Length: 502
Ligand code: SF4
Ligand code: SF4
Image 1 (cartoon, rainbow, N blue to C red):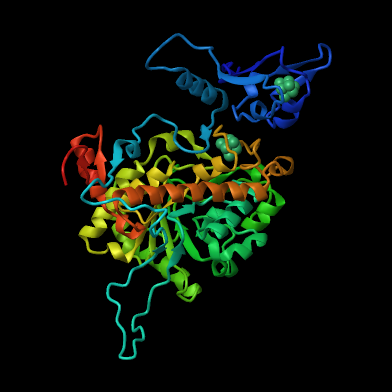
Image 2 (cartoon, protein in one colour):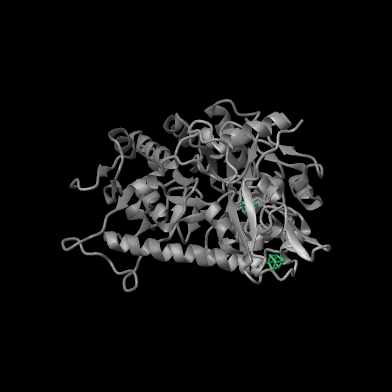
């Protein structure tokens, strides 16, 4: 017998405002709303509600609100409602709990415990509206010493690099986990902004090859959709070793999301769960990783930078040092708040470490070993605003990946049920009737607006510090001060406490 589980949310309908237009019924893929012909009124099944707010936003008379259910078990600080419900769910199903998006637990957010400096009197600020402010940057190996022959011709062979107009890229999100229209929005926005989007592990749809110069293609453990043309089409190749939302395990795309188009792109059967293995079965050491890095370079005539993406875990600095020596051009680190289309809840919420601490450790280790210029560092895993970007760069990152913020710009309401494939906003779904709800013409403009706005704010913050380029901000930890941090945290972050002098 299944245990009854109290609904998490309650749909509240103001009967005085509702005109029974049935918009909510048509808009809800979870079939929460229903018209009752006997009473001529709308009925809601709160049990099915995931709090995606589609009905609330589209109700023409603002008759709806979704509230947290006040059905509670007897108060118990140790066994809260959610914990009890999760035990009931697993006793009912015998299955692993699945979740989507990033870790929602109230762990400390270190970005919010760091404050940015500003110039006063002796070191004047720079006005970005009147003076040049450089946010363009390059990712990849830096040549230690440029040498020229007597005619001024470059003697060095320069490593391939990625040029970015803004210090922001769109994180890996696969076609399959997100919709065609969401992918098109990301690709077009990356092209217009002069930055990059990332295919994730889902292959590259044939329609998107035209965005190749703004595309990073991923090679993950499942090798979905990987072939020579895929590698050739891209600006850079990312080897995905791990992901912040689920370190130590592989990927999982439920069969319901594997449409004919997704199956063709991934080169896998339609309607069958796509499960990528936890390890790459050809990588068990840094030497093995080096072989894959060089195989990919060889396959693309050494013209494309290779990124190695890892999840932020306990021994991150030593792992990053090995990756820097593997021949990779860029290390991408994904923190424990990073989003996902589907992950086991317990892994998402309990495995990994904060990106802020991981970044500080890695940057310092690579500097100490004299190999910081051999690789660029990209970070992601809940970069929520331009201030987070500035703090990340001051801590040592070259640029930041954004995922959840990009999805929010496309209309995501963070209901965290992407794995169900019924995203009412047309983002994390393959259902044609839902996919068309996201108009890529509007979606890409919203992404361009978001990144443009952040870039203005980054310029203002840099100007306030008296810094006129991303390059001068990178690793400039003197521009940060801690607040509410203990000695160990300050030491790892390599910053002083607020009020301490230079
Ligand atoms: S969308 Fe609003 S007005 Fe229309 S049926 Fe639903 S609650 Fe009533
Ligand atoms: S993408 Fe869609 S399903 Fe996923 S959290 Fe956002 S609104 Fe919910």
